[in-house]
Amino acid sequence: MLVTLSGNDPDNFTLKVLRAIRIVKTGDLEIVVVLGGNNPYYEKLQFAIQDLEFSVCLRNNVTNISSLMAWSDVAIFAGLLFF
Image (cartoon, rainbow, N blue to C red; front, side, top):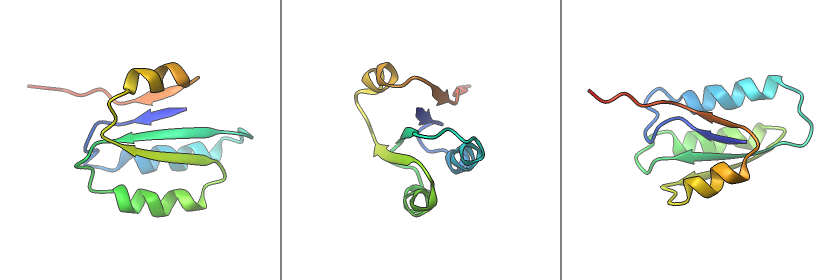
């Protein structure tokens, strides 16, 4: 599963999504979380994923998002609004 909720994720919805996934009994699950370089919650997320029952890999500033999309069976994305 691929999870990315905008580069900075100012409200830390990434952690909320990971906690919600815990509720689902999926068995063998591998998650890649893509974060922007300015995400203020990187360290908090690193700590939080240690308690999860599934594999989570945090990645910053990826340049291969299309490869990760092709790798994943399911993705959770957030849209961005620009005004």
